[in-house]
Amino acid sequence: MSKIGQKSIGLFGGSFNPAHGGHLHVAKAGLRQLQLDEIWWLVSPQNPLKPAQPSWDSRAQSVRDLPLPPNMCVSDVELRYDTQYTIDLLRRLTERHTDTNFVFMIGADNLLQLPKWRAWRTIMETVPVAVIARSGSPIKARLGQAARQYSHARIAEDQARTLKNYAAPAWTYLTLPLDAQSSSAIRAKRLG
Image (cartoon, rainbow, N blue to C red):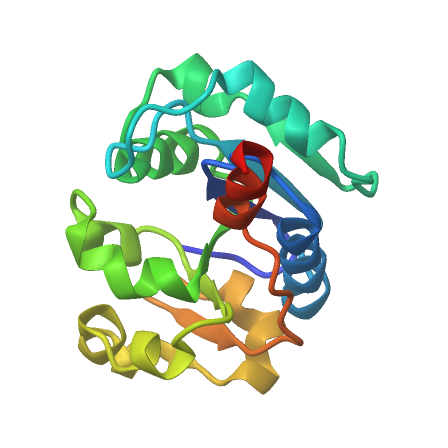
């Protein structure tokens, strides 16, 4: 159960292939709107829903190359815990850091595909989730299976700063000024 006054950490995961200013924009907005103490960038060792990625080190370096504020860091916790699935990582973190309120930060595109993730309902019921709008189909994400099934647990955006104090299931949807940068476009430009 989350407690007021405990340290709050946003878990911002992704392939970051490569990380770019749009990711930083989302992380900063999440930090500010959720009023978190820190953001841990979780560079996925290998996203099971994506084809093979460049090395973890190169993708982590692309995050470190961004102008990260002091309360953001690249975490290798997924490598150290040897977890492949988000649910396994969240379980380990919540077991080992009982003095911390974690908030799992995902893009709206991931809310839409969340039902494809292993134990997705357990993810929603383990830590609060902050869903961050992305360009594309934000309405579609808010009407998807995960959003509908957990509609009773949605926290209004104007109360997002309190999300860290809720026990899961609890989630909010943050509509930020959108940044159209994408890793796919950056990779395509490099190849073109």
